[in-house]
Image 1: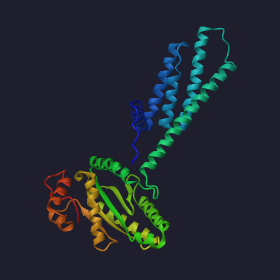
Image 2: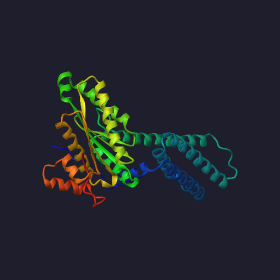
Image 3: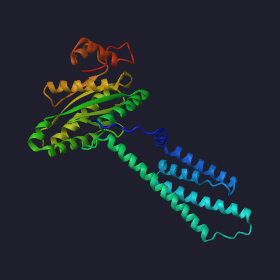
Image 4: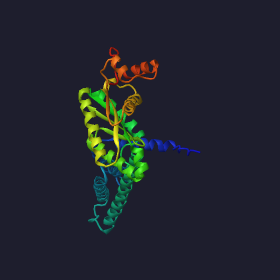
Length: 339
């Protein structure tokens, strides 16, 4: 029986949403909010007098700074809030009792107590964020290769496609399969196969930019999504990627090669991301059936006749579905896949 995921209480859901909003803040925005809140709280503290304690607002400011700006800024904020609270309290007491002398040992101990409490909150908050980020990384990453897993890739792919559409860029989606990988596992053991997968993944990560996407989606199958200025640049990018990965596989000394299918099309031609992956997957299997260890590129600006010749679908209905799914941006084109 599959475990049932927990159903968080409404308060927890709102808290998680708030944490997400804070995490998404940029550095300048978080700094501005921290300074504004800090100054507003000081003004409120001075105006309310010693009767009202503003320990909670100061603590929230420290926690916010630690979460959004990091542990060091959180500690600086903790020191500042502790000094301010003790100073404001002393100023207010002097106003009501002019005979009060300089700060004594009790005031120093009070400041140390506040500082210790604030620093403890910084450690808790920064530790909580580090733990959360580590768990998110684990949930999005393939444990063996360090590449994205399938779920994380599909989530990030939607954002990458939207960005390419806004900027008028083209996309390259490459689907890769390692030829002969099963034989390596059978002949040399799974540890040798794991080394091949790691070398392949590291080579791919070093070849693409940090803004591009690379994922292991199962076994010895990988997928990459790269943004390029136009479709012509996409051809060269796919060829470069295949050549680089093939060279790395050769250097492993194992009888493993790479079959790759790559779809190259303008961002505005993309319909549903899953269909794009399926097209690249189909191209890759065309390579496998044709002898393996090769690259086949599908261009999104070919004619319908060329696409039929390059990648005949199983049925006419399948072909029409592909046309409808890919050709959304400009209905005057009949194209949008493969050659």
